[in-house]
Image 1: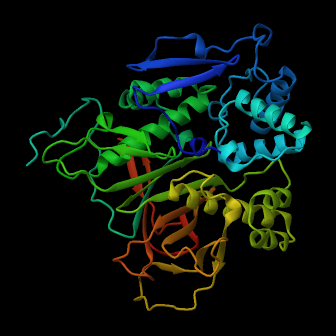
Image 2: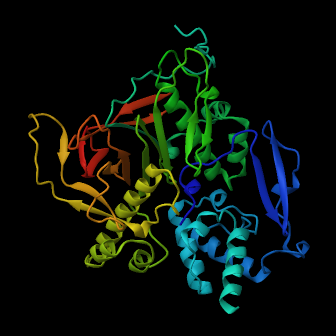
Image 3: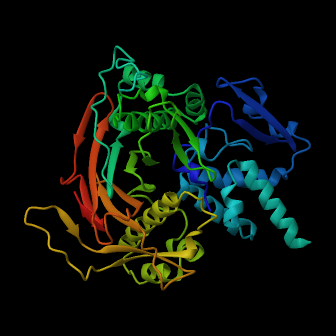
Amino acid sequence: MASLAASSISFQPPHALATSRVSGLKLVSFMNQGRNSLSFGLRPMPARVRISCAAKPETVDKVCEIVRKQLAVPSDKPVTGESKFAELGADSLDTVEIVMGLEEEFGITVEEDNAQSIATVLDAAELIDKLCSGKSA
Amino acid sequence: MNIRCFQRNFSAALPPLVPLQLPSPMETHLWYIMPDEVKNSALLNQYSELLSSCERESVSRMSGDQLKKRALLARALVRTTIARYQTNCQMNPRSLRFRKNLYGKPEVEWRNEDNFSPPPLHFNISHTSTMIACGVTVNVPIGIDIEEKQRRTKNNIIAFAQRYFSPYEVKVLTAISDPEVQRQEFIKLWTLKEAYVKALGKGFSAVPFKTFTIRFRDTTMRNFHPPGSSVSEESDIVVESSEDPTNPANNWQCALLEVAGSHYGAICMEKDRIAGENAPMKLTVWKTVPFVEDVCVSGTDAVLVLGGIIEQ
């Protein structure tokens, strides 16, 4: 099911470790007095640079499309792999609707514990690819 | 007397928050802001000053001005609301610290200082694009959820309910022939289920929506309430676990409201054992613009009880 963070504001205590996964690498940015020492984890990267992406680009694109539609994101606002649902304004009902849309689109079933860990478009795309490859195996 | 009181006037420009008594057991305090009514940029800047730098950074990552404003007001509402409940001395909303429990539910991190006994406050927030709400209880956990009455789903309601709700709930929704009424009942049910899961505080995967049923039950026992008291007894809201249907989750009490004419709001709190099995939930609701205006709206048209045994 949806992340609770979507409908109650989530944030981290000053010395938490924030992990973003990009291109299969784990980038850890340290929140030191609220400032990131590593800034590149927060900037969206163009798709063509991510050659070792853990999810297929076409999956990411499809997820972006579904998210954009569900959240009615204006066309001038970017939706990329790094986009966090909560930052695009998704509440818990939106997130559950997105998961349901993904289930229908890809013919998969997303269990609650998996759904709860989806925070970004990339998280969703990786889970979809995993579930899809599991199906055809 | 606690000599480590925080300074009374932490900000010369802002009047102090009107102090308040803690809610009593079985009582919920509900505070809400309407973001569209808060336009003063100087005020918004002052709210921003109340946030931790981490919170400000989270706000800045929200996509677009509307979402940034909403995130800012949500944090400001939580901080100022909790700071109102003085125990020993006035709390500075800026110095409150928060953390998440094991499952991600936000809670206050009270300082462990000598002579400072932290108030047993619990809180939970919810927001839509036009309202942000914060519920507060004492001693027991609380979960709240609000949705706009006009909220539409992208998916078909019955398909959605079949995927996520319990069989009984699907039956109830399917039996409603008017699509608009069906949509409204769906939204009400959603808010109640959300509020319950949030009150439990263990995340969705611990208690998936399909594993419990929420239903309305006519109250058969009408306790005598003196004339002039404002206890609503429309119907009781019962939570039943699919795992153990014979034993309803008796220790959780739910309320369903219509707030400000525009939203459905659900509140779920654990019953206080001392207060008794059939004690109504006491509810006080304020519409607020922190530091500017607090209006108690309990008992007015701004708060209509749609379900649950509630005393305003």
